[in-house]
Amino acid sequence: MTTRVMLISPAMNPALREARFDDGCPLDAAGAAHARAAADGLRRDATLLASPTVRCRETAAALGLDAHAEPALAGLDMGRWRGRTLEEVGAGEPEALARWLADPAASPHGGESVRLLCARVGTWLEEAARSAGRTVAVVEPEVVRAVTVRALGAPEAAFWRIDVPPLTATGFTGRAGRWNVALGTELGRGRA
Image 1 (cartoon, one colour):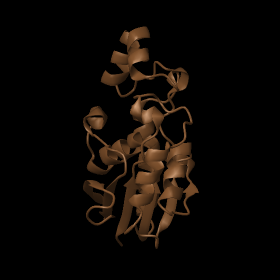
Image 2 (spheres, helix red, strand yellow):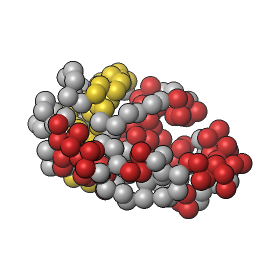
Image 3 (tube, helix red, strand yellow):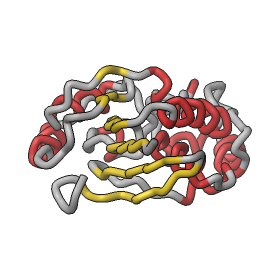
Image 4 (cartoon, rainbow, N blue to C red):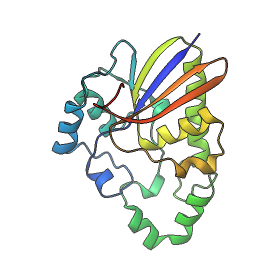
């Protein structure tokens, strides 16, 4: 039995443009327009899911996907850093930021660690592997990173080495306990 999972990163919004930890910010007009333009060619004969964040749900809608919110695919809980820019956190808490970036088990912001995110989405991926068919999900970039780390059996420290541009699809094909990964196809180009 083969399972196919496609994870789509959300369109741009002000938080992504400003390198700000998600604060529930909706898509901007340009991000929504890019998502609508990229909608052609997406498979809709699949289980359609989205991270519960505003930008993921709005991206799914702009792509024409009637996706259901999946709590297991929520983005990383950033605790008290939510809504702050990376620059602001670095200026105010440089040691905490350095620890968070270096240690997957660290959560100095009071939220979720990278290790816990990888475990959570790894459990979801294992459950997805038990069902044949296709899943298409619009998820935060950190969820794509965490699923990639788990699918490849990579160390959690590799999390920060994976770039996930907006409106790209990362495909996972699994069978017999192993996954193959097709990284970052830009929507609207190539087969998604």
